[in-house]
Image 1 (cartoon, helix red, strand yellow):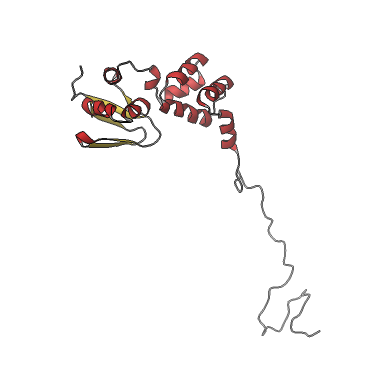
Image 2: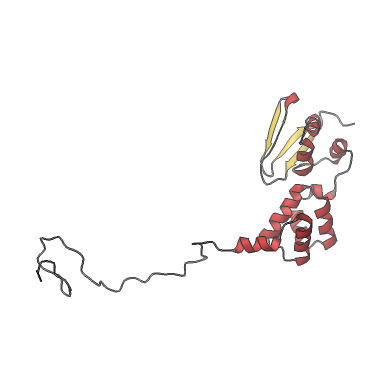
Length: 194
């Protein structure tokens, strides 16, 4: 049995804010992206009993102490639960297809989201892994990369259309009526009646 006052490091692996409240303890917490906090075991245990609390702990926050994970969920965590962004990049670039398929089967939602995001940003060149993402997660990496590289109306990498500077005037500017002399080369003289 784990001491209720044991302090545990908890990390937000979600690319957004994760928040929760434990009303009976008067606790309300927000974790910003990649933020870590030291939380006591009792708070985590009470959170796990609240509706949605176990989803937050299993899929968005990482509890770094394996003994606490076992105590809360009655099972060891899968290795993918502790994957960092660097681990996911390594999996995408040099990991075997079997390692990748295991990750897609056993990783928490936040790691699956990270895989989708990095597969587009890097981009992922392994077509077998792209197909696995499509089959397991329903996310088309190839299409997302195409959309990401699409230029939208008015968006150019560099301006190719350069307007030429005018080479000379075609007509003289309009002058006020008290001007008597018309510039040379003028086709129309407003002071002369025709």
